[in-house]
Image (cartoon, rainbow over all chains, first blue to last red; front, side, top):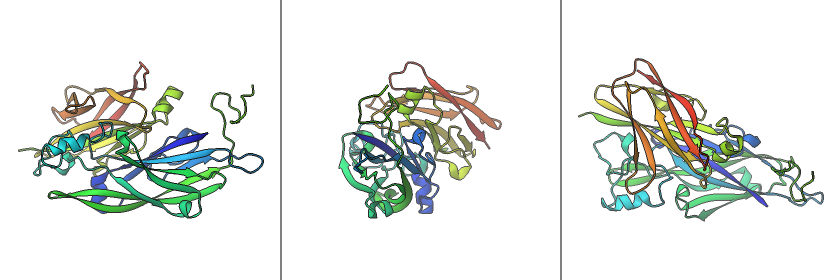
Length: 210
Length: 137
């Protein structure tokens, strides 16, 4: 049995490109806030997951982390996948505004629908020490824009571990998108607190005890 | 001609959290792309968007919503503000059924303007509503 954790990295692309930094311009949130994650919604996220293992020491529970990016300066990702691409093809690949119409180069930059940020890699302590095992996967879900990063977690290793998100933003220059690489630190904390069945409120893996 | 400036206000919702707790508390994250101009409360349930009015610029507010878990459903069902100041419209992205809400100013609010935003999550029939603020200078 495993638990799927979603971590969203929301970027104010214009602000980040202006200062060439994600600091203060990226917001991380996960779906474990009620289970103890710290800093959800801010730039400093510690995702807290419960470890738990059997009495023989073997891992009893897998956690899967999924990182998705989003943007404060683009059309929403609830639109069908490739929506922007199809709209853009009609104007020979030109840029779109935030309503999916051709972007007017004379207009304010706030009207431009930027390409979504991409994660190009995940490195750092949590990877080096074999706590998380990240890889990139394909998906048909629009919000994930075709590709997303995911990692399984070795929940036997308790503690706080940092990792670095490598994020690529795209700056518009004349008729091109120029990739701009940036990084941001986040953390994962693994506790040895036991997992509980949400229905019975007792441990998982055994028949429900009442 | 007036240049149009877009201020995007993004509502991020932990839909599973809302459905399991029947509350927006700790399940709502609000943002805008205007922190550099003094907006505050990013990442909390109480966002204040600070708008600086210039004579040669038209401000358009754009509201969008996104679920934290991609497989879940959320949409904005209503945005309500004083009609004296703000003209609110609902539209859909062409050739799609995805909607967005925009607000354009009929006149500049004196200082502060509160407005109400309602969302619907999953297949729940009732709306969840909350208030946000605009500070206008």
